[in-house]
Image 1 (tube, rainbow, N blue to C red):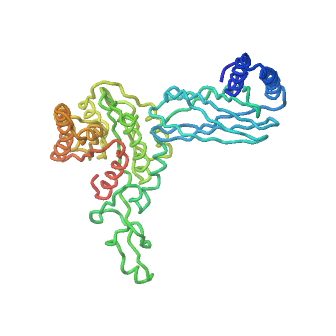
Image 2 (cartoon, rainbow, N blue to C red; image 1 turned 90 degrees about the vertical axis):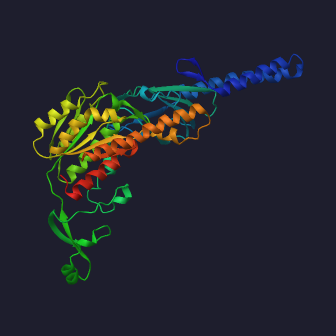
Image 3 (cartoon, one colour; image 1 turned 180 degrees about the vertical axis):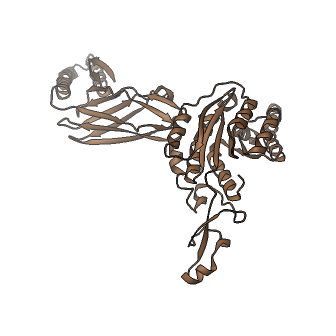
Length: 444
């Protein structure tokens, strides 16, 4: 497609026909009898070009397109974007739609094609997966429309320069929204946690459903109702649950487009929502060389919005994290025993040993869960078949780092510190499992 004048663009069909006519004129030097035929074809092309122009630019009607965006996009998830296009011409049209996507996606060849009858409207939907938080600016929505003749195209450019913020993964939040109350946890990849004793408060007697603990069957009520009835116990409520996010340089490492920091942010959003649904108090803060982005653990209607906005503005600051400052802040500000979910990353035992003293002291006052990440790329590399001495050497080094992660887990457990070693994509599930385990076992 080549620009001709203003909003007029020459189509591929025009150039194909023109080349055929030119070749015909060249051949007419050899075969003179065909000259008249191609002369007529040339004037027919000019006439069709004029008719095509009149159809597209002087007849009533036009093509109208509109981009439909959600209020916000969910980071790390596939988000639907819609484009509506309507043909108001009195004839059939063929259109190419170009949507100028935000620069973060680095995609400059996005286009859609469609044919529309008179008065038809089509709704297209495509998916975008952002991998960083912030404001995403869309450019123009451009439509090239051709008539049934197909020699020319008219360009329509709609100034729908829209901006949409990308927030932490609220789609994950919706996905797990009901798990705090369901007995079908296995469908979400969550483990059933056996309750230890009955230290929780009795709530009510209810009908047995699959997944209930058979040890809680109330035989008296069962005999009266002639169906299985179980005692339902209520978890202890109003316990402070804090997500502590390390936003130092170790959390900038990327996996599948998202940084470790963003995985931790998405998990924090989900676990805070579940904690509130369980009637606990949800809070959070982040640290590196200082403590920032604090939300005090509360149970109120506005708490999730406050946490969401705080997480939206959280950024890595590329400095070494100061665990001594974290310890001092926890000691000073958290007077009630709390569950502390610490999202960080240790690559070596030496890195852990430098912080072990602070972790041990916090674990004495609170229930501390240290959450760090497997290096999935190293795992894949170590599992590959080595084909040279150099590759054997490199895989040996990779296996050493993989094994050292397991040693870090053992070292933490040896000092009585709860831990989760997880793949980044499994972080949310594993964190929820740990929270449910803590609640079921009455460990806080």
